[in-house]
Image (cartoon, rainbow, N blue to C red; front, side):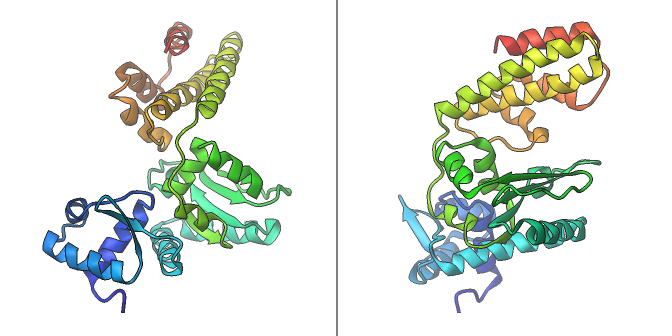
Length: 285
């Protein structure tokens, strides 16, 4: 049998948790708290079963192997089953499958990374044709066509890359899983430039809102801050996580931005003058 011991299951779970990463024996030993001597035996067994790809004495699962594909689905299902809101997630997924007949349904966003806060929305990526999307309260359903997903993948769109790295597969008809066979594409300048232009539009919208509604302007400012932070991360070839992680992710690159984001996330009241001050900082980053 391929899996006979708990230690082997632990190693496979680690590979599936970070499906694009190559790990050395030392790294796997540290992550799983399994001795190096035993790790060599486990890796040797997996290599003989053709489960692994090797690069420079580092290893990752070979997702062209059907067994590895099934393992990814298994561990994602294990994660989903651990969530308190699992029944709601499965009910929504069944409705999506019935009404949209998609290729794939992926749980994304804060729930997929167990970073949800009180009132967090449940976010789904649905790959398929854009029919009328069913409505559910506190739920975001993002529908992308197969062609659109492939194009975004090739451009290294950060939402698509984040879905592949952090998302949990709820349903897949063999489309989404195939992307794990290849390395992640490098973030393109095209994507970064698109985000810069988008931030310029957000900035303009925030200035306009300041004239009529400071609270809404503050909400737009938070979105601008998060998008600006994502640009910093993409330029440094780092995959942005949830909005609650981004501040800590950019802390090493721009401490001031990180502090502003944390301040805005705390939803404290700020005056119009402070919004203007923050806008000037984001304009010049």
